[in-house]
Image 1 (cartoon, rainbow, N blue to C red):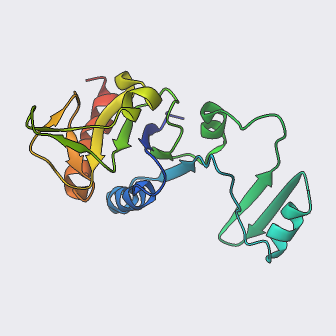
Image 2 (cartoon, one colour):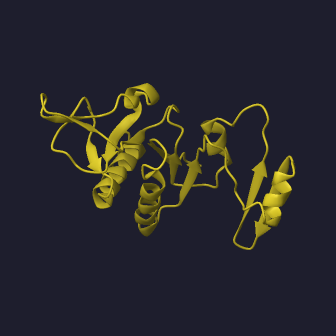
Length: 185
């Protein structure tokens, strides 16, 4: 089985990561790609409301809970020592052409970085990205930056800058990256 193309979307909470991933999924599915998503949640998560049977089982301390239905299945596993690494999660997915990863900022994979706010520096006549970018993401893994408003120039960013609503352009770029990886270009 061939390895899927993996692309991360990193950024702080409420910057539009989930919305962007859903829009990219729609575009990729329209072209016939089988896609999967891995989401990292540093704040903890609830897969089912605590009032559902699954949520109640898990909230009472079950080590794992599996749920099955005609349209799929899911298993929740409680870990006590640490969260599983991204590589382990990738190995657990159904066969996919593309895996979009939300979060895992520090994981060694190519990624897009969501930047919510930038400061304008009149002296440099450019927008300045916040310092967190270099602190949380290895610059060698960054394919591009996504911003809420497209400035004319962003100082200090050595990768393409996209408006987060430019789905057609982003889809084109992702297709180019998939092709490059598939053919070793």
